[in-house]
Length: 268
Image 1 (cartoon, rainbow, N blue to C red):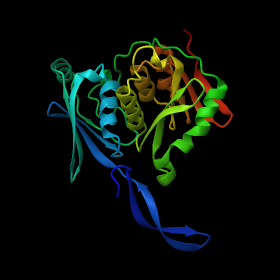
Image 2 (cartoon, one colour; image 1 turned 180 degrees about the vertical axis):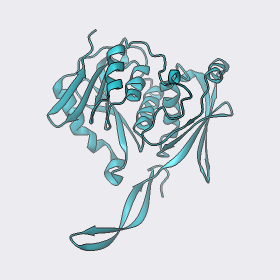
Image 3 (spheres, rainbow, N blue to C red; image 1 turned 30 degrees about the vertical axis):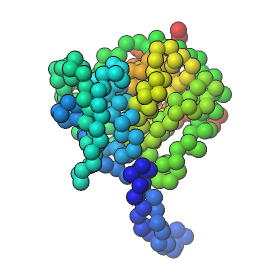
């Protein structure tokens, strides 16, 4: 097993054409990842154990725990028999605010709001996005066509999602993978933050592409980094559409070869 790839090899039986073959298959690794802030455990997410520093940064940004990368003073990653602990040291102000609204979350694959203690905790405070970009049909088509070639984990295992940042021509600039669609997007956000791609004004020339459905949480995370376009390979949900309308995000789904559906088209 290579911890950097998030893949393990297993012996499997493949039944095909009335016959059984013994083969070695590549399986996506899944582990509990504990996010600990200033020695206080905050969340445990089931995730692919790769790019964990980016994951922790992206989660912190998309959940509104921090406003910028400078508010994280240190990140330590420790492996345990039960899983992996990612310990972050926050500024006193941010940790004080986190304690005031702290919640206990036990995350599952594909679950972004499990563990919220009240309906009020589901919705984070998100301002309408100030960035604006018009994405052409050809750019969306270009990005979707490139997506599979940029997902090595998916190619090996068939079990992970991808989240990508694409430029205005549809070229994929950054991409991250994880068994959880929310985790993949958080890893992308963290990667972009570390590369100083989230500085005000820099998101006016690109869009987010995800290999999953466009749910409420995916729109919310997109808004938290002030990106104005979210493109999904699968469908959008009702809450995703409503939130996109509120926050001024163009929301596009069912992005396939030479076809996609526009649910919301934002205007500047």
